[in-house]
Image (tube, rainbow, N blue to C red; front, side):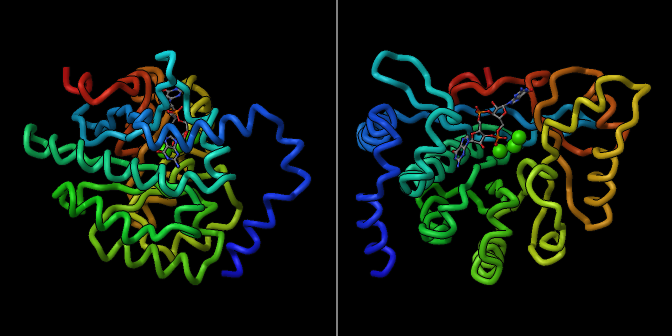
Length: 271
Ligand code: C2E
Ligand code: CA
Ligand code: CA
Ligand code: CA
């Protein structure tokens, strides 16, 4: 009740005026988009570097506007987060991604995992455990086939309650990855406290690998850290064969990026 009081009050916050019409329209549009089914998911393949085998796909949100154009998440997720709409949108993403992945389980051998991005707000305001549970139940997807991509900001936020939530998610059997690893915080203390499975190396570090004669200090350090903690590693944003080869050489297990595949609608993923 205290929170809703504060939210109501926010409506009169003068900073709202500074946001301008465009932002208000976007906010209104987002609520309508959810109601009217204008969101879609595209899927980007994740491969095992040693074999080139597809081991999973990341679900990436898109907004199909009335004019048919696709709006990328960078243009609307910040507003969805500021308004709280990311909670119901994120619930839709989980249900849709699990539904789709369950079809792959039935149709495909190799059973690709599905990776889903979560926002900090889904941890703070939403009942993320119930949402994950209901997405798994409705789809019939085995929990071990779902990987949740968490940002470091989620794990730093409110340690006690977040630790409890993350621990229960882990106990459900889902996999947990840290997205954009290395970009968020200088403290690594949370890594030994949270039951994480995988580190996703941020693409901003991969430029180190463009030139084989150059050092790769950060990438090497992240892979070494993961290995000593018993975590898997995946690199995002791999755009060239040379970078993929270098990652394999350094002991990175999985990769994702334009070199392997762009994000595509589900119907094109296996074509
Ligand atoms: P992210 O989780 O780091 O996702 C990777 C982004 O890199 C995606 O952008 C993807 O299309 C792009 N990408 C993939 N391979 C390459 C490559 O080789 N080179 C380059 N330059 N880029 C590559 P996208 O789809 O525009 O998503 C942007 C961000 O939006 C995501 O970053 C994620 O933080 C957020 N996002 C996307 N879908 C969702 C969602 O369902 N929920 C939440 N909370 N956030 C989402
Ligand atoms: Ca991600
Ligand atoms: Ca990422
Ligand atoms: Ca990133």
